[in-house]
Length: 342
Image (cartoon, rainbow, N blue to C red; front, top):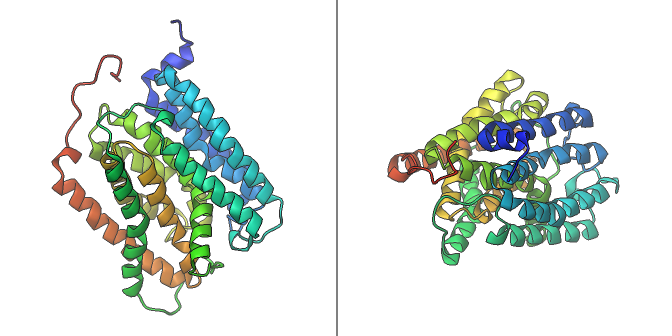
């Protein structure tokens, strides 16, 4: 079959193509939206909506690259675009026009709609029929995947609670403003999880970073090397937001903090994806569970940042334990199958 020269180039240079599309969509939309120059970034208005389309960039890049590397995945990519990202965009546009000051103030109709979207997202990506890139390893059992989903859901809250207990209340400078927080109730937890799954980064990032680029990288890199490479670019992708809003430190210091904090996250996300046999459910849930934390802790931004530093330190210890304790995490893959050479 004759293929377009661009498709052949993307198939030969999948990593470069993935990054070009990811950065090429996200950064212009973030700058054009005007959302980077104001606080809070995530007030659900039209500026937020344009920026949110940029958050979907890694997933869109994954679809483009997967369609060139494995042409048989194009149908799955089109289905995913129509069944998940089009509804998410239309729902996001509806929420953006409602005039809410924050996601904690959206009404019950919007919350129910976002929760329904979140349930649909988990069901969609939980089906192996919707995989874009073939996973280079055996699948996990349903029981193993369910266990990993439970760990991914609960572990971040437990680790952060430990970190919070090790910090003290009080003032201090912070790069973050005090934000509206949700009530720690079942309804508040469900709303926070649904919003962060659909519009907090998980839906836009995980199908790209872990759903497409990770399995492609594992064909010719060890899990440790793949995590390190993906982690570097994953952190750098946030640069416009970090330079504008700060991340632990203001200015260029935010970029360094992001890089240091992203490496253990990249290792842990790779680990849960490996353990789940490539299922996106655990990384989607893990990403969301981490992003939910500020919804309940930003009433005290200075203490939140101190607790988050301890939180990242504990995650780094866990990541190092994985790297040192699991030999397969450091092993190069076997020789690639025909057609999988890079």
